[in-house]
Structure formats: C-alpha cells, structure tokens
Amino acid sequence: MEKLVIIGSGPAGLTAAIYAARANLAPLVLEGKQPGGQLTTTTLVENWPGSVDGIMGPDLVQNMRLQAQKFGAKLVFEQIISVNFSQKPLIVTTEKAKYEAEAVIIATGARSRMLGLPREEEFLGKGVHTCATCDGAFYRNKQIMVIGGGDSAMEEANFLTKFAQKVYIVHRSDSFKASVFMLERAKKNPKIEFLLNSEVIEYSGVSKLENVKIVNSKTQKSAVMAIDGVFMAIGHIPNTEPFVGQLELVKLGYIQPKNNVLTEIEGVFVAGDVSDWRYRQAITAAGLGCMAALEAEKYLAGKE
Image (cartoon, rainbow, N blue to C red):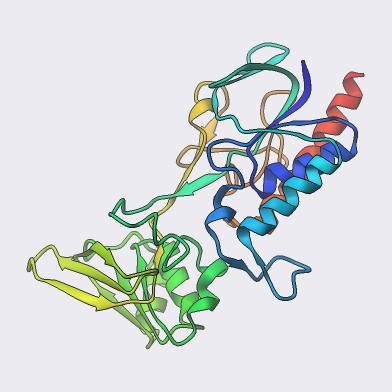
C-alpha cells in the first residue's frame, strides 16, 4: 500500500513529488517510458525562473529528480497500463506491478502531434520543435516554417516573427480552422507567407535540420527549401488512454479539472499538460503539480 502514487515525471509530476516528499508522504513516482516528459526533447530552457543563463531541458529534469529523491520520493522506471478508481484503495497497474494507493496524482502530460516523417525524431530539438514560446528565440533572423491551419498555427507564426527573418505557414488545404481574426492578423504580417495545399514530405540535414521538401497537392509540384526550424502546430494528444472509462474526459481527451487539480473521484488529482490544453508550459505544469501535492496532503491528513 502506497500513500501517494504520482503517475508521470515531467515538471508537474516531479514538482508534486518534491512537495509530497517534503510532507513525509514518501510518494511513488511512475516515470513512464519518457522520464522527464517533453522537457527531455528541449535544448536550452531560457524561461525557467532563476536560470539567468538558461538551463538544458534534460539537466532541469535531472535536478528535479534528484531533489525529489533527496526528500524521500521513490522513482521507478515503469509505464502505466491501467487504473481502477472505482474502489478503495485505488489500483494502478504497470507492465511490471500492481500498486494500491490511498491517493493518486495524474501527471502524464501530453504529446505533440507530429508528421511522422523519417528523421523527425532525430531532428527533434535540432530544427524540429513543438513549442514556439520555448524555442523561438533560438531562430533570430532565420527561416522558419509553421505547420498547421488553426488558431495555434497563426498565433505561433505571429509570435515567431519577433525573431525570424521569414515565417512560412504550411497548410494542407486552402481553408482554415483558424478564427477570422487570427487568420487576418497573420495575413497582414509582412514576415509571414502562406504555402497552401502543401505538405512537408521530407527533412534533410547533417547534424541538424537544414532543408525541407514540400509538395503541392493540387499541382503535384515539389520544392526543396532551406529552412532552419520547423514548428508543429497541429495539436496535442493528452496521455489519457489508461483513464478511459475511469475519469470524465473532455476536449479531445483531456482530463477536466475541478478547482484546478481535483477530479470527480475523491483522492484522485490531476496536474500539468494532461489537463491544461491552453498554456502547456513547464512553469505552469510545475505550479499545478505543487497544487495537486498540497491537495493530496490535505486529503490524506483528513483520512488520518
């Protein structure tokens, strides 16, 4: 029997672990198949408070892991398969074991939708990115592409023009999901050019992205363009598959929090990108992890 199981090891899960461990709850952290979450695919994190010169994403994760362990958190490299929240104690099953818990914090995060092209994973963080606010500043006076046709794509493209020399919005059709306001704003930006009815079909480069090949679906003409950075803006997929049928899922599969971190099940809390489809920042995930741990501590103290 565990007092508290934390599912996930990104900034939300690890912050929750630090707070819970300091409260002598000895939390068990299930790190998942990608310990550290999306931060591990980020290079220099320049917007983490207190890091004047920035900090590498993997280094930030490792520091948080060590801090959680210092206070007594137990971290295990296991991937969750299923849960049973219909009974007490709560049951969390991984590919290696079954855990009983008095309380659970879900911090499984989300993953960006990708194109699924060859070398995409190789270039992740080296020219292929999923967060403009995280990595846009590395592309001052560079040539950038944004993939997508919704509000997120328009917003990211406009943001990236603060740094880039040129921003191309590549969209596979000539109609948009973006709102009229966001679309018009992007169209009026002199640094933005639209490549419609087009798709990226190939990446190339030596140690980092250098070129992309695009094809026009109407003309079937293809072209190779010198591009320094590609930013995905085609949505995110919350990692909520194990919770289907256990929790109410809304908005493309996200968990709908109540009062920031509560769920409809007593003793089950949620934090980070798995429930935050708006901000999706390391610092906001960490803040929610803190809240979830404080609520879990309060819940467990009430039980005692």
